[in-house]
Image 1 (cartoon, rainbow, N blue to C red):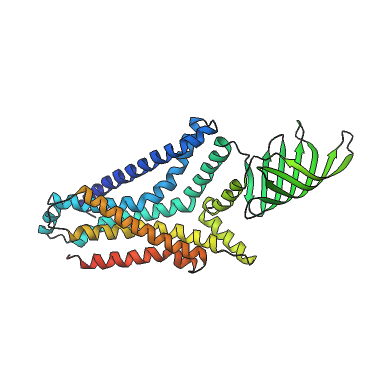
Image 2: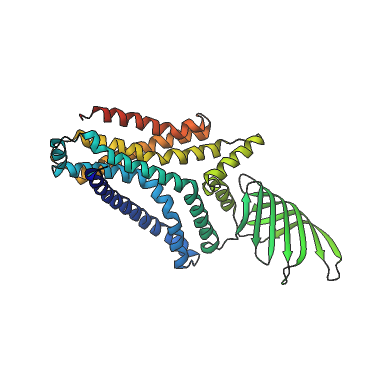
Length: 363
């Protein structure tokens, strides 16, 4: 790796950082003003809003990285061509293949970084962002632990609530146990209900057995056919928590959860698709680099470079990839394709196209 290698790397990285920073900034500004009105309805503090977007930034950067890499590849090669630097390299005996090596090296490094982000950093950051949005901004009770089979909540009036199972629609809770605590945080009463239902904008407990603890240690039992439940969470909140659960798991946690579900003979399609989607997407920048460099090298000798043209090409290709990937994931969710195939199909298709164009370049 000589001087020329590092010169191209610095040239490419400067354009890549500019593209990625610009795209992330534009996305954050649009998203900020879109959500600001809803956040202000809950009298959210500015620090909480800012922290929410800070924790969402890794995920946004992860999603925009392929587009930024593609755009930077097109612009970097175009600028080298416009300044006759590629002509000078070729006159010194440097082949176009050697010119592409720095781009591929940077793309490989980006892929490794994205794998690390999606494996650990992004799930933890998304979980923290969801906590800020739900608890600090929307003033909802905090979930102490949550899956669709086991829910613990700390709710108002010093009470803990345990739900054995949440209905997929989020409108019914099964086997609800409510622990009411006094000011000294000792158990004051225990309510066990068969279920809780959300109707007319409020929660109601059904078939409730209340055990009140007397000061002398005695227990008073009372049965209720129904009781109101002071719970600010809505069915949409519960469905959102359940839907986001895979996104809040690291890849190791997700893999262990998939294995646990398999042992219980439960469907793993949703989790398996999310696992391979995250892994496959980390390799998209490498594919986009090959594609972008190949397209740019085909235009060597034109002596012109247009920023607008490069951005237009990047937008068109990114839209085609997004559409293809979305169709694949939809087919995977419906069961028409295996999760592994659905997650990788767009990557494989664009890799074939990229290599085909790459081989057409006269090196």
